[in-house]
Length: 289
Image (cartoon, rainbow, N blue to C red; front, side):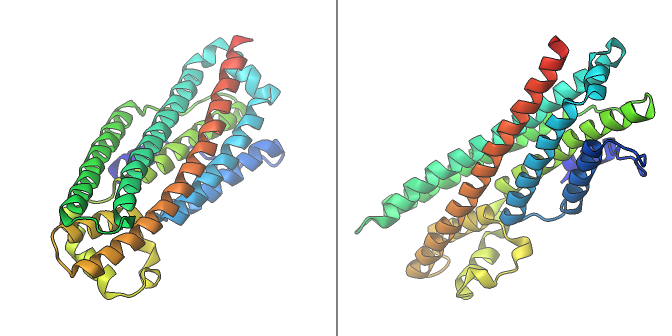
């Protein structure tokens, strides 16, 4: 996940020892960042739901930090214009990635529902099913291209620098930037998760695993990716790598898993998006006063 690594290497500004009399809201922001940092390596649908929830808490805290007189005074100062512009640019970057994630989930869900519809019909023809499967897989390729394009654009835009001023103001600015960097990292990781690996390289091994193990719940949850599993099961169905009845059962099971996964992620992203908008509006309001 190269792009995420670039973000992490380009900026990591948490102070090693916050002042003993630090504002409690700043301390709370630091605690939220620590919790998110501790969960960076987990990459399952349930872990992303948790991360999105923690990001909401983080940006709720950021909104409180923006209400502090210290923050408002620092943002209003002309000599801090460069760092304020970076905060505004960063908020747009996170919003753009959230929009890409929301669009990707919506497109996947729409094609998934069409596939579910044909599987529920009695007497569906094999040609009709195969065409619907191919349509879904073609849609996934479009989603994957859009995600990779958005990540490439984001990699070229990320230019966060470290703020240098008095200790209290520096701590505040750098933590606000780290909040944005953490948001970018999580959203970026989510996009890689939704994109999934190239299905042709993992399709048959994953289909074999799903068919021969009677329950998906026994699979290794640390590597669980409902999007990749769905893609692989559909490739197996189209290429008749297993008996048709077994493969259709796998597909139906994966459709149910994917539907729940998408619902959780959509809800988390929508709530996060509202928090991000609130933060950006707060920044703009401070600048306009």
